[in-house]
Each structure stands twice: as structure tokens, then as C-alpha cells.
Amino acid sequence: MKVEEILSRFDLGPVNPGTFYGEWGPTEDRRLLTSFSPIDGSEIAKVAMATKEDYEKVIEATVKAYEEWRMVPPPKRGELIRAIGDELRKEKENLARLLAVEVGKTMTEARGEIQEMIDIADFAVGLSRQLYGLTIASERPHHRLYEQWHPLGAIGVITAFNFPSAVWSWNAFIAAVCGDSVAWKPSSQAPLTAIAVIKVVNRVVERFGAPRGLFTLVVGSGREVGEWMSTDKRLPLISFTGSVATGKRVAENVAKRLGRTILELGGNNAAIVTKHADMKIALKGVAFGALATTGQRCTTTRRLILHEDIYDEFLEKLVEIYRNVKIGNPLDESVLMGPLIDEKAVESYLKAIEKAKEEGGRVIYGAEVLKIEGLEGGHYVLPTIIEAHPDMEIVKEETFAPILYVFKFRTMEEAIRIHNSVPQGLSSAIFTTDLREEEYFLSAVGSDCGIANVNTSTAGAEIGGAFGGEKETGGGRESGSDAWKGYMRRQTVTINWGEDLPLAQGVKFGGD
Ligand code: UN1
Image 1: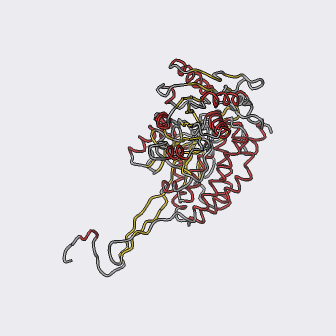
Image 2: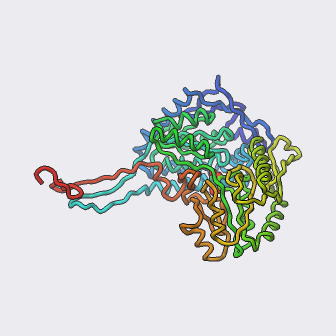
């Protein structure tokens, strides 16, 4: 399928409006953002960026939608999300293709991302019949004490290029069944995917007669739109996915107005492979973790901690896998690794390798920029393995590229010390068949991450669990489990149905 054909499926032209506030905003007299394909560097289409006035319209519409939506019974909200899930099922292949062209994901991963949206829609539908609070024993006679959960408001969601649609849906579908409305600022590197998603979703919103500003869109620079959103008191919650540096800025802005944040920032995820590991599983788990999405996932395996007894053998086999990775056009179903997102990402890749070498690291595979015939404008690199030391500065940084740093360990204490020695704390994995090693890793002195996996990759979490991490990863949780509570306000209710007014803690007042 040609790019033009994919664009036409979503009614995307050469220049597209970048704001949606119940209707699409203007393109005239707007600064234009160009979306380039990382596959060959070609221009896909342009998008009009929001002015402050456009932004105001978006937030007004989102707030207005919330005011209506909050009184719709949650299971009715769920019906809308179920229909959105069905619409996504129909559009899965088209959306996946557009996403692959815009961010360079392989087709299987692009389909996986749309599937992730469908899955969270299903989860949200079930959730819409739950949203339950506790009833608590009251210390007073004829009193009932319980908690209920109310919608929070219009919320702001800021997403990154690497999961340009799924991360929005983790937030948006959960928020919507909770009774919130959602203003979305997508990544400037993936505005077309966002526009297509909003179009698909709003077909259903319209059909249902749901408020038209329930899911709005505002494309623009982070410096402007991100700043407007994080300082906007009308948005009680900002969910941000991106770098630690920008996340800190968002957190500061939102904290200044005592708003809430859900932060999903950098990861620097490690896999520990012990001498008791099932080699086949460990090799596949590490390779997928390090290479999927060309090393540009928050959950990418960036560090490999190998037991000394299996060190040489494991690396030899891993290098063999790396050698056979087919790199190229991600639309070709046989390709395993596509391009990096842009030229800047290639520079960061080269810079990190240089720094690693300066600090004493030894490249054992990769460290090369690739030019692929017919795709000369694309941003391809060889996946890279570097023998490193845990004290090196570069291994504490998240470089969004397929670079894997390898360390050697002897004892589990040492493995965990290396594992936990970075500022980030998102995902982690251990490969072992030994119960003691596994339990040690999962114990309070084990992995310090929000996600801890056994015999499976650091990447590729299911939507049913809460997603997020500790330390500089920001502490936020999105997606499944009880992450929904972050999108609602808790109200503690005390009801006195007696004929007296007994006070708590035995306090006497007046004539008692
Ligand atoms: C991200 O990279 O921001 O666990 C999200 C995974 C995916 C989500 C990654 N399900 O790798």
C-alpha cells in the first residue's frame, strides 16, 4: 500500500488541522509541522500547530465535555469505549500502517500497539462496572462510613513518539470511564497517527451523541503547548510520558498549582541472566528487549548483567543473533528492526558509543550507521553490544537507541547492586530457573523497579498491570490494575442516621 493510500483512508491531506475541539481547527496562518518518515526521510504530510487561541478553544471544549460527561453513569460511558474498541478493531491494519510509516515500527509491533489500544478499551469497559470504594467500620452508633469515587475533570495527556497511540489510550479510555474528558498533546514526531486516532474515535463519539469535546487534540511544540497545559489550572491532572528533564519541568509547573501528575519518564532497564537460566528463553528475552522498537521503548533492555560462568557463551550466542537481525524497511514483514526516529537519535547513538569507549567500554558488536539501498534518507544503525563497568557514567543514562551494556557478576548481591545502581527504575527482568535467585530478585532487597519480570523480557508489558516505575522514572502508574484511581477524586463520606450527634474520638461538645 502506498503512503498516499494510507493517508486517504484517514482523510489526511498535504496540510492537516492539528487541533480538534469538537470540530477540526483551522490550518490558515498557522505554523506548520512536517511529519517525516524515518524509513526514508521523506515528507509524509504537514500539520497546523496550535496558536494560544486554538489551545483555548481546545481546553474550553474539553472542560465543557467533562461537565456533561461526569453525570453519565459509568457503565454507559463503558458502552462508548466498547464501540471505540470495535472501531479500532476495524481500523487496526490501517492505523498500524500509518504508525509504522510515521515512527518506523515494524508491522508486527505496530499492530501490537493498536492491539494494546483495543485491549485497554476492553479493560476499561469492564472497569466501567466497577470503580468501587470501600465501606469502613464506623466507631459511632448509627453511622455509616464509606468512600466513593468521582470524576476528576478535564485532564491533559502528553505522549511520546515511541508509543504514539497506545499510551494515549491507556490514559484516555480509563479516564473516560472514570467520567473525565481528555485533551491530548501528541509527540511532534507523530502528529498524523494522533490525528487518525482522534478521527476514528470521534466517529464513535458522534454516533453515540457523547460530548464532542470528550477527546480533543492539540498539536504543537512541547515548549508552548506542554507549558500551557502544565500551568493550566483547568487541568487537574497532567499525564506525561517522555524524558526525565522535561518530566521535571512538567512536575514543577503542576506542583506549583498543586495539581496532580502521572509521570512515566526514562527507563534504564536491566536483565540479569544467572547460570541457572534457560538459555533459549534468556537469549530471546534479552534480544527482544534490546532490539524491539529499535531500542526506543521506555522498557528497552539497556543493561545485561551476566553470571561469570555463562558470560562468554551467552555473549557469543547473542552476537550471533545480532548478526542475523534483518534491518531495513519496517513495512517489509521479514524485517526485525527498523530505523531510529530521526538524525538526532543517530547522533545520540554515536555519542553514547563514543562516551562508552572513552570511559573504558569495549564494543563487541555494532557501533555503525547503516545506509540502506533505496532508503538513503532513513536513520538506520547496527544494534550495539558494549562490555562495560557499572561505574561508567554513560550506563546510567537512557540513550534511546539499541545499545546494550554488559556487566559480569558472581553473587546475586552483586547482580542486584549493579541492577539498582542507576537513577531510573522502570522495568527489570531475571532469567533463572532457581527459586532462590528468583525470589531474591522479587524481594524487598531485590529489583527496585515498578515492573519486575521473571523469565520474560523487560519490554512488552500487558495492559492489565499498572505500568510505571520508581526513582527518576517518576512514580506514576497508568493502564491496568487500580491505576484508574489516579483519574478520580476520592470522597470519604460519613452518614449519621441516628437521633443524636456523637462525635468521633469521644470528644464532648456543649451539653453532651
Ligand atoms: C513505552 O515505551 O512508553 O511494555 C511504553 C512495553 C509496552 C509499552 C511501552 N507495552 O514495552
